[in-house]
Figure 1 (cartoon, helix red, strand yellow):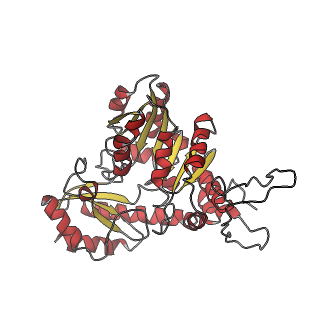
Figure 2 (cartoon, helix red, strand yellow):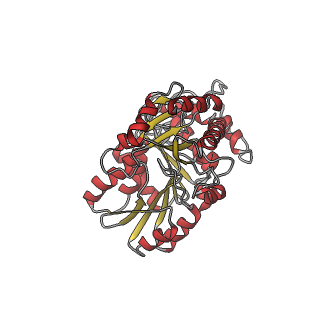
Figure 3 (cartoon, helix red, strand yellow):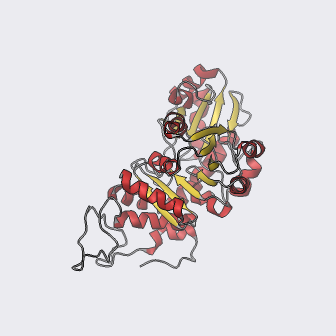
Length: 380
């Protein structure tokens, strides 16, 4: 049983599309752990389920919910965000030229430079936030994929999705976007022309720090998408049923959590903009931010829960400030209900484009005044 799809996305998410178990009438879905399913007597699989590496009823429900929220034509869940992201590049062919951002999730950038090039992908890192620069680096007929991330981790550079999609398509390339930070609450990239949307589901989609997962949503069920479907099957990178069940639980509160963390982040960013201990605040919600106008155009209802501050005193000052927090937690990751703080350059290591004085903040759903007071005492 599913709800009227004309309902608002927040309603569809809160009720998980109105799903009710046909046997028990329970409103919480069961966890299907079976790895194999019975064939019919005539050797067919009329349930559509054959083996756990391809399908799982719990995973199917989570995929259907996320696909609905993104307005896509298909969704695949993976064992991690990296498994999802790398599958897009693995579906390309040797010799294909791909463009990715200079500033992006460092794990994927590292993988592109160290592994994707080994089987012949021509990887070029560009300033995707600069549309003219992006257009200049496109190779008509040779560029097959443009990968963007907006807002981009950890300096939160904003890329114009619609303009990037138009440029990529004009050159004969697909546009894929890491929309982990924006989530479908704030941005639905397919409506702006994106071909594939990627999420590290570990982050905001789940939101409770207890699931490892990734997701891809496609604008079209075409040949390239089917290559990704086969790759997930062959690589065995499917999400587990328990993780899929937890993801459904997280998606049901997605709108509340993202709206609260976005409001909190705006309050924190506004308070510390121009602060005597801070060199700069990177947050697209600030009108002074270089990406604010584009963000306002493609992000509805908020600017996300992620921001970064650059601390006076350089690397030493930044690490010292992070050491003094009491409410924030010093931990990697983002998108949870608790606020996290991290010195990113230390995490990314040599060659990172991240300034050494930068602290990345994942703002949670606590009281904003407590978060501000904690940072104030840490910076004092």
